[in-house]
Image (spheres, rainbow, N blue to C red):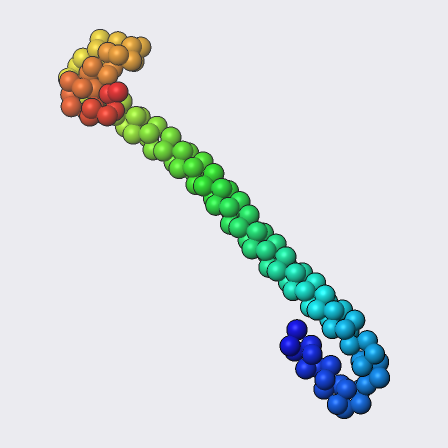
Amino acid sequence: AIDIEKAIDYCIDNDILKEFLKTYRSEVTKSMQLNYEFDRQLELERADAIEEGLEQGIKQGLEQGLEQGLEQGLEQGLEQGLEQGIELINQLNQILLSEGKYDELQKASKDKEYQKKLLAEYGLLNEKQGE
């Protein structure tokens, strides 16, 4: 408000719209204050909208990143688990073949529980894998 008053005084002192400003000083002051407040409000709302947009963008980006990361992690985990499982069965099969235990090999190929028992017996299965 002080800046507006100073600007009006400057204009009057320098014969810029002197008579108009003397006559309508109060209305000009109110109008300028309203205009300033309106512009300031727009500025604040714009800043809030930008901040809100950034927050939403960051949140959405994090959610998408987590989702993609989980999908990739799950795929890699399944792939590694499958490879490890195949490797364990191949090791068991090689041991049974080298010992000439063909009946056990045939039974293990059809019975998962028996297969787990043999894997544990030969020390190929740790506790976490047996669960």
